[in-house]
Structure formats: C-alpha cells, structure tokens
Length: 273
Ligand code: HPA
Image (cartoon, rainbow, N blue to C red; front, side, top):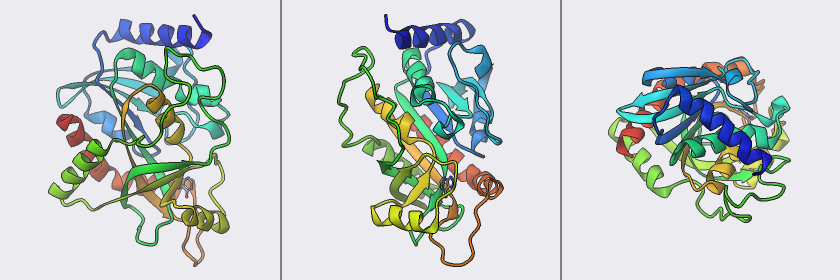
C-alpha cells in the first residue's frame, strides 16, 4: 500500500473509533465562518493534533478541529479550520482531510471561504455561489504518481461544482430573500492580498472573486468523485479605485457579519440532499 493510502486509512480508523457512524456530508468552513459547526448536534470534536497525519492549523480565526455529528438529522463531518498552502503545508497536506472524508464515506462536500470581490456588482457582505474556478495556485494537489484507488490520472473538470446543488442553493436563497451572486472563484497562493493590477488582471481573465483556499480541496474532491458545492462571502473589494487597504481583521469582520445567511443556505442544502 502506498504511504498516502496508509495515512488516509490510519486517520480514518482513528476517527471511526471515536465516532463509528458514516458521515454523508463533509463541510469545510472558511475564515470567520466556523459558526455553522455550532449547529451540529449529538456531536463530538476531535482536535487535529489527535488525528494521525493531520497537519495542524495556524491562522487566527481558524479553529483546528473536526466536528462529527448530525445536521438536520444527517450525519456530517465538519472541519472548523482548514489548511492553506501559504501556511507552508504541501498541497497533499492541504487536501489530506478531503481524502479522509472520502474514506469515511462522505459523498457530498460543502465549502465556504472569504474572498475578495472583483465584479463591479459585488458589495462587501455579499454571497457568491461558486459556479467554476480558475486555478492560479503554484502547485497542483494531484502532481506526482497517481494512486488509482483514489481516482483517475486525468480528472475531468468540466463541472467541478454540482449544477444540481447550485440550483438548490439558489432556490433556498430565493425562498429566504437572501440575494446571492453566482460566479467564478480564482484560487491564489497568498498570503499577500492582491495588488490593484492583480485584482484587475483576475477580473479580466474571468474571475469574480479571489481567495487563498478552496481550489485544492475541490480538485481532490473531484478526483475522489465527490459532489461539490462552494460559496464565498465577499469580504473586501479589490478593484475599488479609491484608497483601499485590506486587512485580515476586516476580512474576518465581514465574514462574521455575513455568516448567518451562509449558514442558513448550507443548513437547508444539507436537509435537501
Ligand atoms: N484576496 C485573496 N484572498 C482573500 C481576499 C482577497 O481580496 N479576501 C479574503 N480572502
């Protein structure tokens, strides 16, 4: 067995010993968006440090634990705190939890993130359903020998984000009077926010929002055959011409303020699965 398969099995075995159910949905929550995990009932929490081969998370605003339990009666596994490439983790480490979720039995992956808006229609606090992405990150999570047990060598990326889930999420948002945009997420390395020229460039190439996460997990989710839904909270507007300094605090604040809307959509999406 390859090292990676062995590591996935060791992590999944550890988790199963603590929580023997089969999670149906995996949830990865972004900066300032961790509160959804508080809606999980009958839950147990496992700090990342206790899970074999899990990296540990370092960024302020990211809590590092796995939460397993029920959301609207469905068994779920949620990551409060994700791993980012800019922290120094390899892409294999960043995406390891997605591999473990798949090994536990997860079929659907929901992700959230804080992102910078580049579409002129967007305002701080808006929600954007990700309908596609552009990967500008410098390393690919599938680089290296392909492990056939995990997925194909050349995965198709024509529909990484489930059209069915996008339609359902729009329906939920509409029914609850929550305005949502749909757009393209550009994944970058960070940890700097972008220069004005970079925000403009990313808009010109087709991006509506930019962030430092999500794309690696989505790629590995596709490789693993998972059904995927992802949504961004727009926390800053890079393309504004006026003075426009972006700080992590402001990103967290905007994410926290928009969180209840995002949480409602995720919660109802999970019930509708
Ligand atoms: N750029 C990159 N990542 C981000 C941003 C941004 O403007 N906002 C939140 N995460």
